[in-house]
Structures are given as C-alpha cells and as structure tokens.
Amino acid sequence: MDFSLTDDQRLIRDTVRQFMEAEVRPLIRQYDREEKFPAAELRRLGKLGCCGMLVPEEWGGAGVDTISYVLMLEEVARVDAATAVALSVTNSVACVPLLQHGTEAQKKKYLSPLSRGEILGAFCLTEPQAGSDAAAIQTRATRHGDCYRLNGTKSWVTNGGIAGVYLVFAKTDPEAGARGVTTLLVEATFPGFRVGRYEDKMGLRTSPSAEIVFTDCEVPAENRLGEEGQGLKIALEALDGGRVGIGAQAVGIAQGAFEEAVRYAKQRRAFGKTISEFQAIQWMLADMQTEIEAARCLVYYAAWLRDQGSGRLGPYASRAKLYAGEMVNRVAYKAVQIHGSVGYSRETDVERMYRDARVISIYEGTSEIQRMIIARDLLGAGEPARAALSPEPAAEGAR
Ligand SMILES: Cc1cc2nc3c(=O)[nH]c(=O)nc-3n(C[C@H](O)[C@H](O)[C@H](O)COP(=O)(O)OP(=O)(O)OC[C@H]3O[C@@H](n4cnc5c(N)ncnc54)[C@H](O)[C@@H]3O)c2cc1C
Image 1 (cartoon, rainbow, N blue to C red):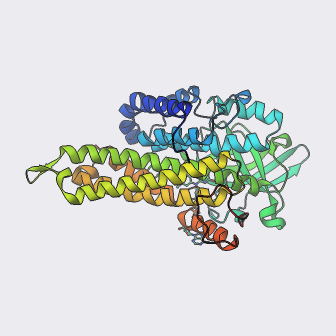
Image 2: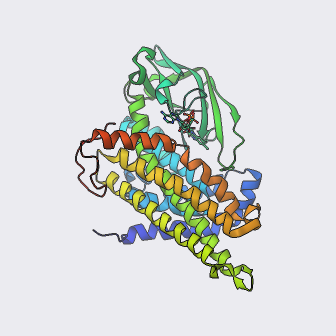
Image 3: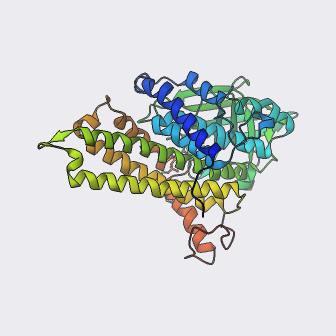
C-alpha cells in the first residue's frame, strides 16, 4: 500500500496552495463581508486547469486523476470554501455528466468552455418541495416538435445567475416516477429562464445560491443530455463523484481552521503561559488533527476508487462525505473555541470557516441520506462486516 503522492500530484497541490495564499487569502474576508463573487480569481484558477480537472485534454480539461482533483479542492477550501464549491459544482456535477453522457456537439459547445474555465456550470435538481426526495421533483418538460418546454422552479442553485450552462432535471413522464426524469442543458439566455431570488445564507456568502424559475422555457431537443428517463440516474451518478469533492472541501476547511487554531494557541497567553501549554487546548488540537487525517484518508480512498472505475463508489463516497461533513463542524467549532471571543469576531478567518462548514452536512445529500445509502449498502451486500479498505469489495451496492 503506497500512500505517497506522485510528483504531478504534489505540483498541483503546491501550485494551487501558492495561488490561494497569494491571490485569494488577502481578499477573502472583505469579499465575504461584501458578498462579492470571486469571479476574477475563479477565471485565473480556470486558467490553471482547475475547472475541468477530470476532463481529457481534447475537451480542454486537465485530464488528471481524482486524487489530484481532491488535492486541488482541499487547497482551495483551506483558504475559501465558497470558491471551492463553485469549482466542485463545475467539475463534478457539470463537466463529468457532460463528458459521460454528452454528444460531440454538446461537448464542443459546453464541455470545452467549462473545462477551460470560460464558463461555470450549475446543477438544478433541488426544488422548494423536493430536496432529499429527488424523485418528487415537479418541474415538467414537455416535447413540442424540436424543443422541450420547461416549467417549474429550482432552488438553491449554486452558481445560479452566473453559470454558462445549467443541468436541469425535469419530469418528462410524471407517471414513471424516478424513471420519468430527463436532463436538459439550459442557458440563461433561453426565453422563459429567470432568476427568482438569491438566498440570504449563513455561510458561503460569496457563492450565489439562486432560485431559478422556468416559464415555458424553450430548450432545443438537441440539448437533452442522455436519453429521456435517464435523468435521475445521471444526477445520482454525478452526486456520487460530487460527494468525494465535497468531502475534500470539508477536509480543506478543517485544515484551514486547524492551522489558524494552532497559530493562535501558540501566541495567545493566559495565566502566564501560552494557551498551547494547557492540556485542554492540546487535546483539542490533537483530536482536530486526528479527525482531519481520518477524513482525508476516507476522501482519498474514495477518489482512488473512482480512478479504478469501481462500480462501488457510491457507499464509499457517502462514508467520506458523511464523516468529513460531520468532522469539519467539530473542528471548526473547536477552532472558534480556542480563539475565545476573538473567534466570534468577523475579524478572524475561523468565524467565517465555522459558518461555511455548517452546510457540508446538508448539501449534495444530508448526513441522514448518506447514512441511508451506507446502511442500504451494508445490509444489502450480504457481507456487512467486511473491512472497508478492500479494493475489490464483495458485491454491488443497493444503488
Ligand atoms: C448552500 C447550498 C447550496 C446548494 N446547492 C445546490 C445545487 O447547486 N443544486 C441543487 O440541486 N441543490 C443544491 N442545494 C440543495 C441541497 O442539496 C438540499 O438542500 C439537500 O439535498 C437537502 O434537501 P432539503 O433542504 O430539501 O431538505 P429535506 O429533504 O427537506 O430534509 C430536511 C431534513 O429531513 C431529513 N430527511 C429527509 N428525508 C429523510 C429520510 N428519508 N430519513 C431521514 N431523514 C430524512 C434530512 O436529512 C434533513 O435533516 C444546496 C443547498 C445549500 C444550502
């Protein structure tokens, strides 16, 4: 078992770290306060290859492995979680489904500019009445000649209002339930597309989360991604990969908060000592680092499995996302605690990280949904107690 990174992986990690430290860290506190989307910084990350990391070079991507991808997300999130989510959505749930299911024309039109960072992607599954229960979406797409007419409302769309292409999941056959969902590639310029409103969020305040309203929105039939009825399968497959990225985002935020906590603990004095000399603080730091490492292992393992083309990615991605999502909340909480009242001030990065961390156990499937996926897999697999670190697990999962 080899845990070392390749030279290429190290180069990607170090390049992104350097960029985030030099170009983003000095600005991010102010951007958060002003809710300013880091458009210029994202364009530059796009030029570094961060928008289409899993896309082959022929389509404008970096064509690297999933480990490199999670290293990139981790480094971005270590400084700014909101920039990381814009990249995660574009890479995992826009580029990857386009690569896997797109026609040549769709790839040329959308995948190449996405991969080069010229446009961002958006993923529109959630609706006001349907989040975890994705099969309950009500947005309808009806075929009229050579176009689909789209009606409905999507909510919490990351990159909403700024994306160049939206993957929209809509019912084409409501009677068919989960098998009646179809994916359409929608542009904001299509007639009948409208941004309803933006969410006023606790964290990720520089990342726009939009409500998108479709009113007789006309989508050319050639913009259907995959076949009619394949939509939910496309969405769930994309989310399996997406959860590895969100796990990496969690590890990155936690690492950033941890480093801030160590720095502060070594410098803050109380009772004639630095607070790092108190065992209570040392134990918090030790627990934080241990939990970050545990989550990192789960995330890298799921990334590695994805690179092996494993059909069993789903439950492994869920374990990584579940643990990392809960871990980052504990770590960010402790980072604020170690800072005392200063940690409650918007003058510190840990205050923002604490708010940003909260969403990780909610989006791309809540912790409860991850536990459902994991339990369904372990109870259905026939070999429930099998060790997780096995490259060739016993049976196909329930999903
Ligand atoms: C900042 C942000 C960005 C987002 N970006 C996107 C995006 O780009 N695209 C997109 O489509 N969506 C996006 N979402 C939406 C997100 O994926 C959903 O909010 C999430 O899937 C949960 O859905 P919900 O909010 O409707 O909660 P609900 O499904 O209503 O769940 C409410 C509570 O009930 C629990 N619950 C539900 N069902 C079960 C069950 N069967 N068993 C046990 N507990 C259950 C949940 O775990 C949760 O605790 C985003 C959300 C946020 C906050």
